[in-house]
Every structure is written in C-alpha cells, then in structure tokens.
Length: 294
Length: 264
Image 1 (tube, one colour):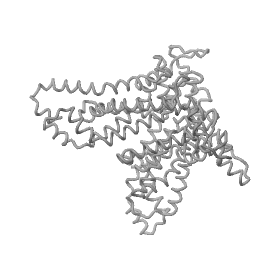
Image 2: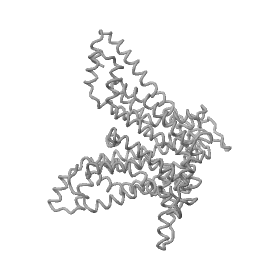
Image 3: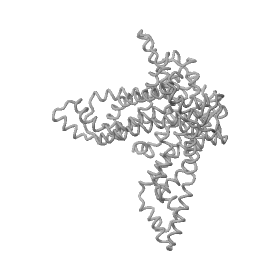
Image 4: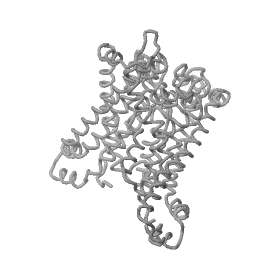
C-alpha cells in the first residue's frame, strides 16, 4: 500500500486521506449496517421495551411505566427464579471445573498425534448441536434409558433423573465441558514441568505438588473457564427446556416462555436485562479474582 | 510439551471424564439402529428403519434443505461482508478501528436468548419473522463476529513485504489483494467458512425466535420433535449430523490445522 502510494505522484494530503476514508467507509458499510439493524437497534429497543405498559388484557402500549420492573422486584416468584438461576449455574460451573480439569491437564501433558486426536474429541461435541447432545442425555437419563435400565437389571429401584434439576445439571455440565477445557488449556501455559520436578526431588508427594504448585499456577485459567461457563449456564435454554421438561424454572426458559407463549414482551425484556446485569456482576467478580491471583 | 510421565491416577480420571463427555454422542449410535417405536436403551430389537424414516418425514427434509441453503447463503455473505471489513480494520487502520472491531464482535458477548428476543421484537415490525431473509439477517449477526475475528487474525499474521514487493513491481492494490493476499490467507478463509457454516447450521436459539409454521430449520424441527416425542428418528438424524460435523472438522484439520483454528 505505502509503496504504491510512494510511486504515485504526490497528491495533496487532504485529498489522499479523503479517498482513503471513502474506501474504508465503503468496505465497512455492509457490516456496520448488519450490526446496527441486527444488534444495536434491537438491544436499545429491548431496554426501552422493558418500560412499556402492559394492559390487563395483555396488550402492550407505548406508555412508559416502571410497573414491569416493580413486579419483578416485588413478586417472590421472580426473586426465586433469579436466585435459582444463579445457584444452579454456580453448581454447574463448579461441577464442570471438576470434570474438565483432569482432561485439560492430561491434554497439556500429551503431545503429537495423540494430542490432536484428543483435541478433536474435545472440540467435536462443541460443534455438535445442543439438541443432539441433549437428546443423547435423554437416552441416558430417561425412565427407559441407559442408567435406569442398568439399575433395574441389578434390582435397584429406578431414579428420577429427568424433568428435574438433576437432569439439567448433568446435561449442562457435559455440554459446557469443552469450553472449560479450552479455557483451562489456554491458562496452562505457565505450568513449568521443572518446578514440579524440583518439588518432587525435594520429596513432595504428588497431591502436595498438585495443591501447592499446579493448582495455584493454573488459577487464571480456572477463573476464565468459570466465568465463561457461568455466563453460558445462566443463558442456556435448550438443555434446561428439554431435560427440565417445563418443571425447572430458570431465567432463560422464562424469557422464552414470556416472549413466545405469554407474549408479554416488556416482562421478557426486563428479565433479559437482568441476565445482562448478572453477566456484569460475574465480570466484576472475575476481574477482582484475577487481580487477587496475579 | 511437558516431559513428566503422566501418573496413572490422572490417566484414569481423564479417561472417566472423556467417557462422560462423549457419552451422549456415543449412545445415539446404537439407538439409531433400534427396532422399537419409542426410545429405550438398550433397544429391545434392532433394525435400519429409522434411517429411511428421516427421508420420509416431510418436516425434517424440508427443514434440512432450508438449513443447508441458509448455511450456504449465510457463509457466503459472511465472507463477502467480513473480508472487506477485516481488511479495512487491519490494513487501512482508520481512526477508531479498535472500537469498531469491538462493536462488530460485540454480538457474541450477548446471550443468544437475549439477542433472539431483541431481534424478534424489531423484526416483527417489518414482517421479517418466519421468512428466509429474516433468518439470514439474524444468523449474520452471530456469524460475522466469528468471520471478522478469524479473518483479522489471518490478515494480521501475513508477511507484508511480499505484498509491498508486488506493489513495487506495478501491481494495482486490487491485484495485490487478489493474487498475493487472498492465496496466502487460504487457511484463514477455510477456517472462517467452516466456522460460519457450522454456526449457522447448528444455530437453534435465534432460529427458534425467527421460525414459525411456515419455515423451520433442522435444529428447530429436531427441538420441537424431541419436545413432543423422543423416538429413535432423532438418533439416526443425529448420527448423520455428527458424521457431517466430523467431516468438516477433518477437512479443516487437514487444510489449516485444527489447533490453529480453534485454540489460539
């Protein structure tokens, strides 16, 4: 670019800059248009809609009111819904961390073709539809599924593993594992085998090495993975809906029901903004945690 | 990498967790060969009837063609819109290019349930709900951030001296881009294509807000099917989809390296 400009006869600076600017505008215009129409305008409109009035008939009027916000804060159903969403998501995040850590550590220690194969195994679920994976969990957890058929074969009474929180937690934990594994792997760069060797030479048992060296060094990766999984758990919808069978009430499923079934858009908008507020809170906690670790 | 031998405890733990991670994908394989009319595991009898059943199901086949066409259109548009934008942001570096990159990738930060609702409300005013154009626009909102991110990385890592040499030898900026830059960023282009295609083809939450009785995508049709009855039809369909995904992943791995595309 700069070389081409050097050969060309020196144009007045302002004109060159203007034609450069025109080119930039031309190249960026399409994406800016999609971004504005499909993201900026809808999101700003969503914030506005949460203040619209809903008549008792269910019709919506373009009159600004705090009624929806007050309902959400006063009605204990919504307080429970929010609390439920946060606690369930925290539980899922913790479980995902425990399940993902061994895989990530093992991947970090492996190399060559074997590592590539394992990495494909980790990433493939990520690229498979959540509907497919949730269907797989229905096959495992339902009354006539793998676990309950195995239990009845050895004479144990069947367990209720679906259409309740247990099913949602198991399914979402597995669905979020690839994200956690990739986040942990990204943070494992600081792990130096020589430090572990030194500790081992000095007589530290394996568990002490893990607790005193590996774990502290991988905390940044853990923090990132937990932030990612918490945020995804709060906003996930397909798995809670199918494995919860309408009996597990979470923010995301309630947003969908209010938007599609009840058609109370101001309420759905208000709950959406609450989800974003929870995201913000998680981000603040993450930043604080990171500052404390580093 | 790490030269420390991997302890047996870690091996066993990793193996257990791998089984857990892959369990839902593995169980659909035997179920897809079930001879039962409803889903149970293990199946009481075996048959191949659920594979032809997919093609006899009008809802699933029409949803499949919609999804395929949608993914194709969305991927093409993502490349056509994303590449000029990435080029402008990385190479021409206008004032505020960092802020613009942040804005253009911001839709990924928003949960799709919130984005879906926001788009539903605005699109409903313009009669875009349950239309192909509406689905294309909604999918572009989430595929463009991926496109711009991968393409910008690919552009930023190219050696600029080769392009400068071509320009010095008299090639016009467009010729330099077409003959030098594009071929050199081949792996980035393949990665973007695969990523946009899979994101669009698998997208379900946004599509749930945008579809209706008139038009449906495959993930949405499968979602509604599973919601009503969990029969082995979805299992055989899932097996076909997993094979499709693995093929895409293998192609990406062969051409540009999986690790490079997904793990930075």
